Image (tube, rainbow, N blue to C red; front, side):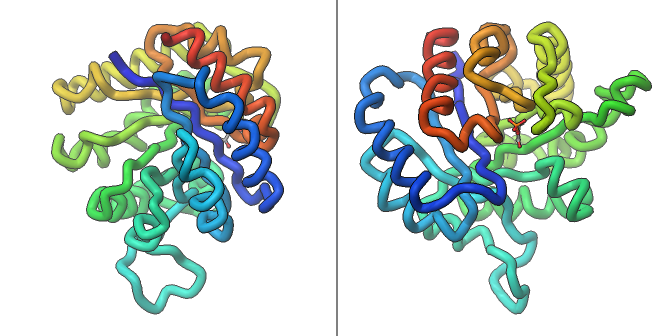
Length: 253
Ligand code: PEP
């Protein structure tokens, strides 16, 4: 039985007010949201406030990124042990915005992955294809290139990993993969993982991300290999994020 995860990626959005409004919403909702994990990735400057506001709730928090280096002279960066000190349990790695805007390479992401594991952080590793790559039938080739270097690290590194399948064409666009399209890729990802690490594949949680909203969450989460979602825009409103969490509880309970 895979415990579903609903994760919110605030990106470079949010405020102290949003931290507080999430805490307030969860005070009344807590009893309904059993048997799922809820994780929010606020900008790093809000992690301390998040820790204070959310520590008495079920909500976990994490970093949106980390440095591939140990603490030292890297202005503007955040090292894995710093996230761990802020009681982060998760870290997002390889988000398509990190890959496309900041040029993060697979080698860099793999190095970050190892830093996360060394600090006891669970990576949510994002993978996914662009529209052009999908149109050319390259979806699984692209995902294999993103995943295989991580899978090659070996089972010891993979125990806590969560994968987020985020088709780039669906992120922030309002275009969602159909449940069938998403399920097909999730099943292929699980198969790929099984080829490299058969013992972790059945329990591996694979989240779908890309314009998940309260009105489409249920049909996506109902699919067999979709174990929750990574939510961008809709996580910036406590009520819509809560509705998406409820959808996961309903579909997976
Ligand atoms: C994301 O940024 O990971 C994401 C899925 O965004 P959105 O839900 O806004 O498409």
